[in-house]
Length: 228
Image 1 (cartoon, rainbow, N blue to C red):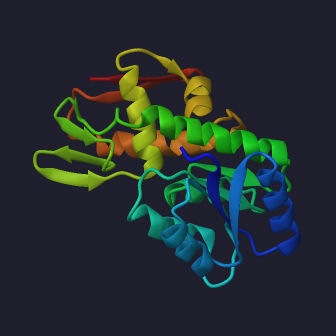
Image 2 (tube, helix red, strand yellow):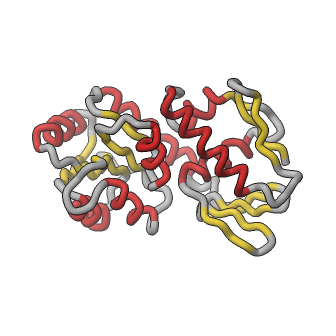
Image 3 (cartoon, rainbow, N blue to C red):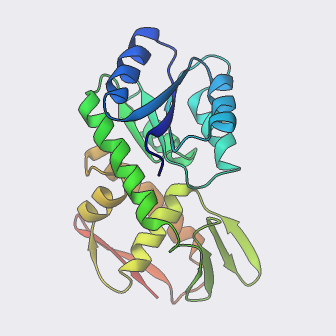
């Protein structure tokens, strides 16, 4: 990691962008501020940041669209969404479009900084260890490419689906608590994250239903177990 951690910040409220920029720069970050989705994507290409902070509602392209563009090229770079929306579905949509985390406005700078460090540490700890293929029953799970292959047919996973499946496989045949999964992947076990986890578990079950020896079972209100 470089001496200064480079971040692209996409925020169209100048006063908020300035506060975030100045706060992060006191913590050894280099912040490139952009005001719309096009600028954010262009800065990602030209500046090669280590993390992006994207406002969801922006001119030209919204944060979800920018994240989708980036995910076509880079599955690993951390993306944090800033959103004024608070509905559960909005949060789920954010993860579905490639986000790693989200913060609802208003938020504290300390919380943003903690979330940034948590995501950067996770990327650093995972480097060089996740490029192999994993056999889950009759499936081949490629974490790096975010894909599941069964009988020659490949299905692409979202970033969050791949993260949840990787975590469940790391504790396969053992019950793992919801709280543990949420804190490891989302960084917080609050209600909205819990609802998001339920959605991803449901989607993974459907994608793993071709092999009857592979199951994700749950202990209601406690946790999940991947049997394979």
